[in-house]
Image: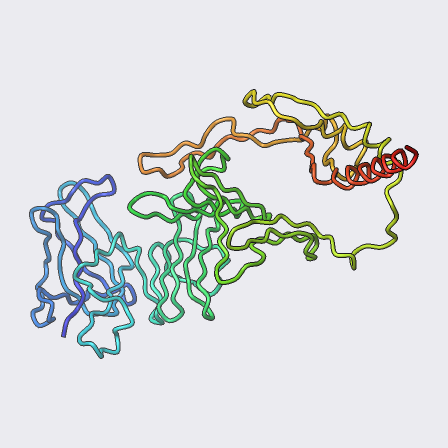
Amino acid sequence: MSIPIYQRVAQTGAGAIIPSAEYTVINENTGLDFPIYSDRAGTTLKSAPYFADANGVVQFYIAAGTTFRVAATGGVGTYTDRYVYAAYAQESATDATAGRLMSVESLVLLNGDMFGDGAGSVGIGTSSPDLSDFTAAATGLHIKGLAPAIRLEDTSGENSIIGQLNENLYINNKAAGSIRLYTSSTEAMRIDSSRNLLVGKAVTDANVSGSILNADGTVLFTASGAKVVNVNRTGTDGTAVGFSNDGTQVGTISVTGATTAYNTSSDYRLKYDDIPIANATERFKKLRPINFGWVANGERTDGFFSHEAGEVVPECSTGIKDAMKDEEYEVAPAVLDAEGVETEAAVMGTRSVPDYQGIDQSKLVPLMTATIHELITRIEALEGNV
């Protein structure tokens, strides 16, 4: 048979060690002295009075399942450790107490803050371990073995829970912070307080490498000097990426063994009331093809201004000329400690920035084709008059 050990340095409230302190052990339930032993087998009773050693260490063995207190006095002050719960020691692989705390010789019960409820739960910092609700508030550390869960509370009063219920694993940070995963002491992933998933990065800055899956369904991938997104279809040719609006597919990117096609919806069954394009040449003449330089890098190219082309072919242009939008930006970065843990959140602000227009030049092809048809008709008419 093995019984639990109590081992603790007797210290005053100010932290001063009480060498050779005289102590008593009282049953919290009866208020009477409780027998203690000098050996783990529980065969040799210690005789009162009891004393700590020269270093203030109080050590004894006590019957399992006991709630007790230790009170010590000495020249520099007093020490009290209340509501200490003696855990069960495992006697064999089939011991019926195996579901309770084991390896008690390595367990230090701190300041009377550990409790057992006799029903498979243990509380540290609370005498009423409660894991009945994964979303309810609670204090201390709650551990339950029958419906496995751990509830934790930090010094700020915020608490979190990790538990298993109905085949589901729950991780709930009830504070306004994040949930973080580390590998080799380096943060690998986090879910921030806005429920966004960040992989390979700890900030939402678009210029920092990593991935963000936002709670609103948007995503951001950033890589430095490397391919940002790779889509690979295997087995057969066909659609690699699909685009939908309100659940209806409106476009695809398809691949073969050698080519890529960018497809927008164009099936005749999706259209009605088709008529020839009229006055194509006159409309086409209103387009202003130009050569221009890009502000970003000075590169020159041929093309159009979106708003000008949109006046001729509205469907080729997106956005509104000179439009602005609000953008959130980082005023001051988050403060991290030496281990990379955020101690102060980033300071964010809002500013007004251009909401740039875009153009799909492929939408000009029908007008160009109709113009060519009109020109061919005129040429053939002229040739017929020669």
